[in-house]
Amino acid sequence: MSFVNAFPANVSKFSYVGMLVRPPGPPVTFAICNATVRYVAWGDVIDPDNHKGVINTFLCISQGIAVRANMVAKGAGVIQ
Amino acid sequence: MSFVGAFPANAPKYVYPVIHRLIAAIDAGLGADLILLRGTAVYDTSVGVDASLVRSPTLDSAVGAEYSLVGLRSADACLGAESSLVGLRLVDLGQGAEYSLIGLRSADLGQGAEYSLVGLRLVDLGQGADITPLKGIVAYDLARGSDVTLKYIMKLLDLAKGADAVLNRLLGLYDRGLGADYGLASLHSDVAAALRDFNVSQIAINKMIGDIDYGKEVRAEHYTLVPLAAANLLSAVSRLLQVLKLRGASVPADIQGKLNACWSIATSYPMLRSGDLISPVHENKLIDLLVCLSSFGSAFMNLLASSGSDSGGGVEYTRLLDLTPVADRVTSVSAPIPYYTDRLSPPGSYVIVRPQTTYTTAYVSGLPTTQLGLTLYVRNISQGSIVWWNGSSAGAPCAAVYVYSDGWVLAWFNDRCSGSYTSVAIGVRTEVLSGAPYLHVVGFDQDHADTDQPCINVKGFMFCGNSVDAYSGPVRLIWEAWVPLS
Image (cartoon, one colour):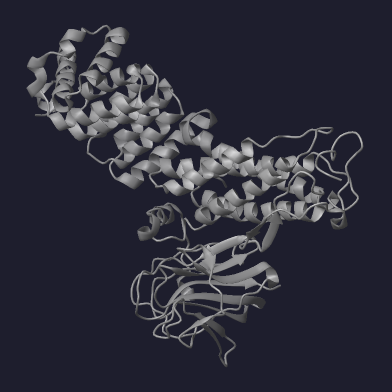
């Protein structure tokens, strides 16, 4: 299953790694959140692990920012 | 020469001549005909004042050049012509030169002629040359133009004397008087709303992520919720920084730049609807966003932790917060301690203290671990990388671990492996406080923290020690944390 035909009518399914038709893209490591995700390219399978890694990394990073923003906002009296 | 002496308050007939003098002074001080002409032209159109009088060279010597110059410059840079016109009026009514000048700038940023006009009066009542309150006005002015708003600002300035106090009063007054449609009140509500929106989107993501697995359908929301959530978060942070800036705090340019870059990525994300073709761009753009957010997040989260000498922002931000001392955590203090506290949810369960004092007992330290959602590491500031334990130079270890009989485990890091000094250290020990178990974590700096920082990351909340900025001297406890184990 590739990105090309992944979405429309014949509903795409997240594919298994064994279906990879080309090597995964370059890795991007986020040391703070202990995560590594990979860029993808046409022809790659839609890898749920990679995508979940992207989302979990976002949650990790954004939560850290949100916690600090909340703290600053409360400390400055911006929010209750 | 003061306008006070020159113009009796009950002599309105002198108003126009005063304006003329001001303009002339500006003209002489700057030598900027274009600026003068802009102001004059606007003034002529809106108020009907004779432009030729404004440019009368005979009045040039009546006013101090530096005084007029600043006012004119502000108006010229910030406003349209109407605003400049108002600025002139403001000066006319004013008393001290510096004061009026700053007021003019504030009014200029506000936009809208009627608004600025009121602001002029405001400045006139203010007295004194403190710039800080005027900064507050500038901030308000950016929001909108409103006669009502102006009146409130005027009262504020009238009361104002000290910089910080004035600014705070200004903010508060503005909030009470105007409600959500104007100024900081609006910003405050925007911050709260954006944070709420982020929380909602975060919950949606958490619910959705379980649907992403082998053999399951790929849905549009699997890709689109993240940029939406990011936009909400960045919106909140952006407005929050704006509030802080309006209060006089500085926001490092790199932070603002990173914020803008992330916002650009999030808002340009190619959105998907069911049935759309998905492409690698949809995944890769998310990764680009992560890279950007990671960079911005590190800078943003270190904002409070940084010292004044680091970025220029830490001190100001800390000052703006109502921090609660945790002095009972620190012993052997010989002078008032600048402190920094931070709390995570639940409130009070997690505390970070950053005393600038000597900690003579070489305790503590920490092992890198991922348990409890906790990560301890030493970061190289200049390289932005983690300092690893392994490696050596000339036979000297780069790191060492010490275990103490009272339960502390201390890890020392030496970034040059020279053995002549130690850079930083992190330590841990389990403790029971009020019957509850905690992991007591400590970050130390002996020297060279200007390149290395001991850091702690608890459930996504990162904190790094500030720069002690010394190459020798005693070990310093630069932060400590109690992480609840229960």
